[in-house]
Image 1 (cartoon, rainbow, N blue to C red):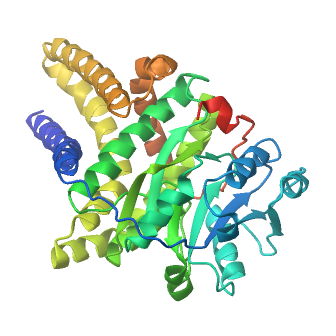
Image 2 (cartoon, helix red, strand yellow; image 1 turned 180 degrees about the vertical axis):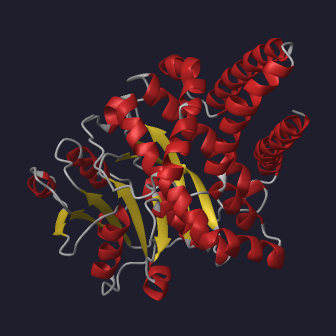
Length: 407
């Protein structure tokens, strides 16, 4: 049994070190960023943006997105919205045309969102007016000053940027509330903190900008179910800075049901494993060659699924054996669980307050956020053995306008 205890301790230290990396780097980055926040210079130039949206069956929500884009506080002659419609069986195209956007049928086979984006970039490649692309999801609505802030980012020399990802429906359920908190933490510790450490923000699927010349020169070559994470990893390998435009706000619809959340997070987890296989060795080699933080960050991000599996193994297997050997550990385990839960509540509340958000709409998410995170553990184990996951439709039906959000 001694060897079991040794393995148990080794795994405990590994998972502790993994978590400590994010906690310590996140806090240090935030402290530095707050003191030395990069101030963007005002440059009197209006760039032309091609706004890209991949849409499947989105008739319930696409109209509100287009309306919010039509009402941006930006020169209407300096951007154009293209809705790329694929695999649709509803009236998405009709709604798009009624709201004044350009509906484009995707004429190639589509298995992932990346396929749609690749088609979109090829479709717009010949448009020499476009300076940069902005990518949104069909269920989003956009803050009126979004393009104004992204224009400032582009004029200050950044070729890739991501936005502040907020929620349309934080109070729908404990699941949507948990998603909201999760992205708030991500905004703060994985994006804003990285600006303080001269690292890269993480692209999270929607509300991001990429300069046209990058895609024209390199194409949009992603192969996983998580094209956002994969593209972030590619930027790290190419030393391409990803700026966090915290004043550019995207409001996203988060799943309200646990079943939908489970399906979505399975896809994310499989994509994570695919990216790990494709890029981990390259990132490690590049880190020891350049010692630049984005390479280490992305390597650790791609290890997330295996870190969760180690936690399952540690607590579910070795923990039980340890309990059988030493009954006192039960009391210790209970204390650790209570402290962990209270810490999660504290971090959630502090993050919400730091971002000047309201706590009341998120109380269900705060209380059950730990359950949301714990539920990711079995997903990781399942996806380790079920990697051939198809890109499944996530139904969007929360037709919330920007005015209803309160902005």
